[in-house]
Length: 152
Image (cartoon, rainbow, N blue to C red; front, side, top):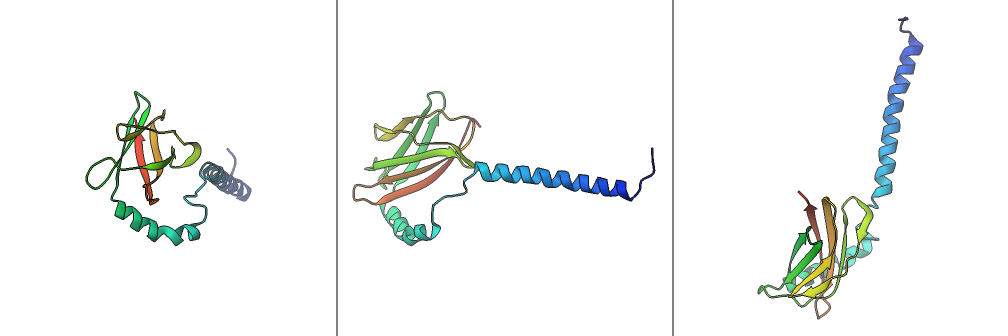
């Protein structure tokens, strides 16, 4: 084995830091390409109506419960009013997807069944999120984000 000189130390240092920088670049590109990073298109515009929407949702007093049956491939959403009765929901819109990437996002079609809203959805194991938007008969917006873990 030869003697360690300045060129060897330089080559080792450049190689070491080169590997670290290359790995960081690959991970950064993967992170940026798989996650859009947006909750809303324009946060300033969204903030202008936030307090009014929040007060409207509090006045509704609705509660939303989610259930997912992986065996039947069925997602069930149940809205209840403060008295525990089925809430009068109209214009239901749900975005289901992974919290960290938009590739698997879907908008299932829900049908009202016995006071709940049911949609056929096959979800793979792992963490999922739902952005739920619905309107009361008077036009008040109800919006909620729900997280769930499938298969564990």
